[in-house]
Image (cartoon, rainbow, N blue to C red; front, side, top):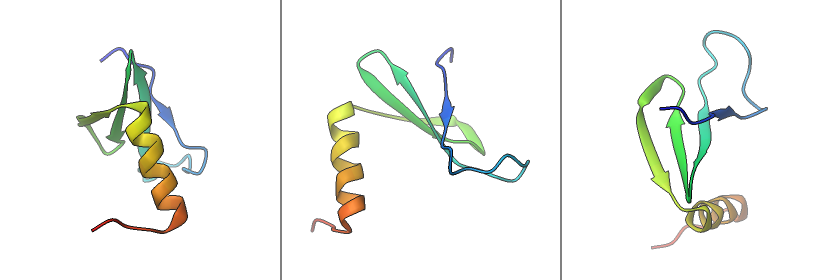
Length: 62
């Protein structure tokens, strides 16, 4: 995948500092775990923004 993956600034720099990486892929956002880079989840910016706002608010649906 030729996307430009970005790692959170909260992640460390050592060998065992796994983190979620993010890449813009056209109209979608791709997410992957750095220790399992072949598994990629794609979503829309709107849906990802909604998830982040919900997590920050500490609320859960259902």
